[in-house]
Image (cartoon, rainbow, N blue to C red; front, top):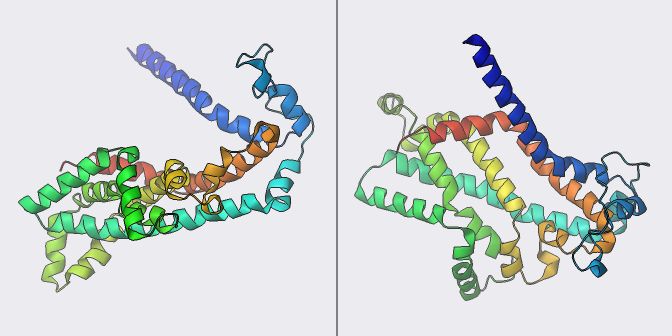
Length: 291
């Protein structure tokens, strides 16, 4: 029986290892290829980007992880010689950071309200939140465009920031987490003379630290990689984020695309590595709570 258990664990470990390698392969390939010279990249992948081949690759593509000669020319071009890439990177930061901060703030207050006050109206509003969360952004893109046009926000950063601040996903996840807080703890605080603001700031928020971390990470990654919203709502290309600009790099700048994609991955990777423990704990605890 013990041998059978060890065998099943070994098989699961092997499968997990295979899937991990498969998922990490594109990221590792992008990072290592960003240090290759442009000529080496074209010799390895040139046939893929050859527009005259009619979509058929007649030669074998060489997936190479270790460059023959380490080159930083792509990074020098993207970060120093071509300021447009840095401008696009700052556009991404200006758009995403306010969304993360204010969405977490709004979700905290809304989740506390949904947790403390019960009733049919509250249940109906929360159900409406869940329906909105289930809808993909492409469904609400046209209404957002019309509302932004009516408010005169079209082609401004507010057309991206305002809908992002009031997204329902954070409210749903944080509400589920706040319901884990024992009601006796809140009642004890009220008996000690604590008001609603003190209960919210000194009891609920510290108890939801892992959920707040996980929400911030998920929201950051989601909006850091957004493409549809800025393409539709920001017609001025000078205000579009780097996620949109990366898709417009032509085939003659393959090495530059690898380098800027690597730079663009760094904030998400650092944020994930910093809050990985909180992310797993927050999602697990939020998902284990019944409404």
